[in-house]
Length: 157
View 1 (cartoon, one colour):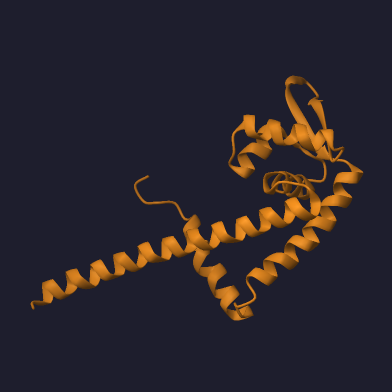
View 2 (tube, rainbow, N blue to C red; view 1 turned 180 degrees about the vertical axis):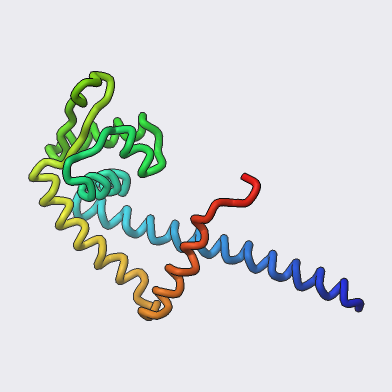
């Protein structure tokens, strides 16, 4: 075998390993999401999407316009509208028209929403810790550091 052939085989091996990494990341994410989704539904009667909206609003004490929530969660405005409608019906969120712009809705947590989210967030954190219990604190830090590189822009894009 030539040195060039060896290099090509090594490159293919690295490429295949990166595909395996992608699949493992995807499977791990899907597994954790399915467990968390089922637990949130069973214990709190909320969807994972509703939890995500409540989480976004909890980080913005003054509330947010609907398009900000949509952009932050990377879902369509139509999807956010349906989720917020259900949260409003449950008394967890208040929706109002934005001052000076009647086309824009502004949403924020109610007191009931803040309390419910606080309980859910504490339990959610415990569940995530349980699901990731096989990772040491050092491994967790290393994975966070390595995976943060996924947010970098792709050259030429």
